[in-house]
Image 1 (tube, rainbow, N blue to C red):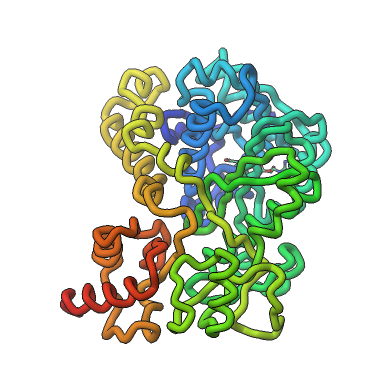
Image 2: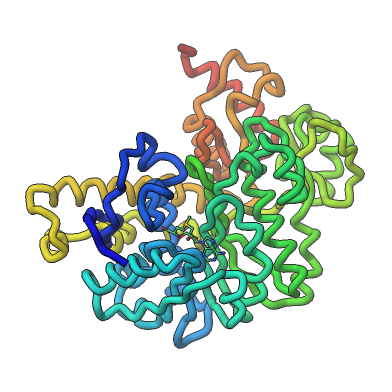
Length: 445
Ligand SMILES: C[S@@+](CC[C@H](N)C(=O)[O-])C[C@H]1O[C@@H](n2cnc3c(N)ncnc32)[C@H](O)[C@@H]1O
């Protein structure tokens, strides 16, 4: 394989050389990537995804979630290996020394570029390469951490990957088939994920929950229980990160967290949701935007108000969210000028490279520290969907509504969701009254 012309790039605090794309792609950096233009896949729009992966690994290694000693990590669909190199270069050495990282890719070209980068920037990094189809190569087993970052849907990989996890492990799963997960391609939603999803403003939250339910049910089939650590929808992709433990009892209890979302629920549906512990807002007699129903609640599959089956439990853990500390993120994922010089970046670009890295790192974890403070079973309330359930003239400011609910004893926050929304577990009557108060006090423009 020939190296040819290369481009030097920086992501987080890690440099890479990649083959220079052969043609200009007007979507470069925004869309699903540049496959076909480079001989190795690289999508700069996934930098936040990789930054969160570095920080989540830092959190897990700081806690006692995984066994002591060496941690076997598999970057399952590794491409240029940028994620693995970020783990190894950005984590403090007492953590990175514990990692036994393998990069798997089906294409020899991808692994050629992993090797090129290791040779050029970090010849001492102990990265191991596995060429072949992840679905067979993963079965060596005993992995404490697997990252799954496919083109499109992760479904073909989830089953073999779960079987290959160690007793206590972490699994991160990305999906770029958002049209399927959000119900806008109904055939693939049912075919791949066994679900139907209403295409409304909650569709991306439902998509994350459908993905989580698929991971949970696959894990359960192999006597494993999951606990969500993080769930993120960002531009063209969704990603769930979970801890997976071998436990027959936990696996049998999977049904507790699987169910349905019903918009515009009836009083009877609200009562069932409250009784099942799925609706912290209470007030079954009040009309409300949506509720979750347990898996065994009778569902009319032609009822267009319904999405599911989906995960009805929390989508993240407060401990994981609060570990995404902005100061720590800067310390780990923003380079210094000495390193930039050593890697060959021109000195007149250092300032802007450092600033771009800093901004990108903050964007990757925006609002996580606030979300860590709200109850894990909080609902996503989209403010311009509060009317007609609350007689508002216009949507209230999410910031003001979240602040008012918090001041009234129910910690709430603006959600890191692209539609203006809050996360809250407050009683519906309080949400109702404060939304009216806040929107009356906020002049409508
Ligand atoms: C979306 S890219 C991964 C991007 C990478 N994780 C990153 O952060 O830059 C998907 C990669 O999976 C590889 N791939 C596709 N099918 C595979 C399979 N069955 N087994 C192993 N690798 C596969 C492709 O060659 C490609 O490099």
